[in-house]
Length: 336
Image (cartoon, rainbow, N blue to C red):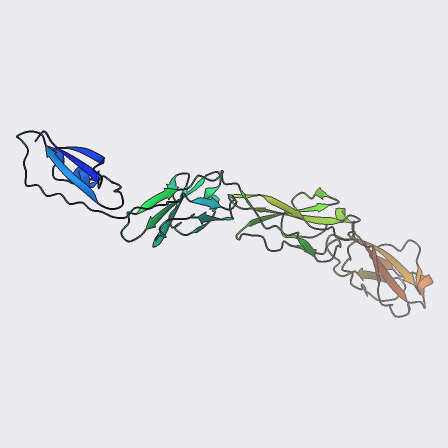
C-alpha cells in the first residue's frame, strides 16, 4: 500500500541503469512487465528497496530477459504509383535476420483486404489515394516489431493498352464496313465507336459496323475507337482512312415483256425488283434495237411501223450514290 517500493537495476560496476517506483497497485508486477529494459552485456543486478513499515516482503519478481534487435530497417516502396502498376516492398537490412517478415499494405491509412504479399498491384480503388506498407519482423526469442514506410505520392490514373483499330470491308456505298478495335487492356475495357467521313463525325454512326451512305461517295472513312475504364485515363485511337468511297451497285434484274406482239396490242414492261429501294426507273422501247421516239412509259401500244420487227424494253435505274444501271429485255417475236 502506498509508495512502498523502488526497483533499481545496476550493471556489474554498480552503475544505476534504471529506477522504478512501485506503488501498491503495481506490486504484483503487471505494470513492470510491460516495460522494455535494455540490459548491458554481462552481469546485471536488481535491488528492491522498501521505505516504510507498510512494506510487505515475500514478493517474488521474475525478470524475463530476451534478445533485442540491433538493426530494424524502415521499409520503403519501389515502383510507380499508378493504377495497373505493381509496387514492391523494399525491406532493408535487419539484424539479426528475421525468421518471418509479414506485410500489410494500406490505402490512405486503411488496411487493404488481402494485400499481404511483398508486391501489390494497384487497383482502380487506389486512384487518388496514397499507399503505405507495414512490415512486421518475427524471430524466436525476440519481440515482434512493426515498421511503416513513408507514403507514396498520390496514385495516378492508369494507362490503357490502346491499339490502332482497322477497318474491314469494301469502301462502297451500300456495303458494310466493320471496325476491328484490337485487344485493349487491362480487360475489361468499354469501347465506343465514331465513324467519320473526311475527318468529320457522321451523326448516328456509333456502332462497330457502318454502311456507307450516298453522301459518303467520293470521301474517305475512318473509325475512332474510345476506351474507358474506371481508374484509367480515357484513350482514343483512330484507324487509317479507307480508299475513296465508290458509288454503290444497284440490284438490277433483266426486265420482261407481257402482251402480244401485234399491231394495236399493248405491251407491258415488267422491271423486276430493283434495290436498294427506292430506285427511280425509266423506260425506253426499241424496235429492232432502235429507240422508238416517245415510247418511254412502262406500257407501249404496238404501231403499224413496228410490223415485222422485234421489240425490246430497256429499263434504267438511278439512285443517288449508286452507279446508273440499264437492263434490256429479251426481244419479242416479230410484230404481226
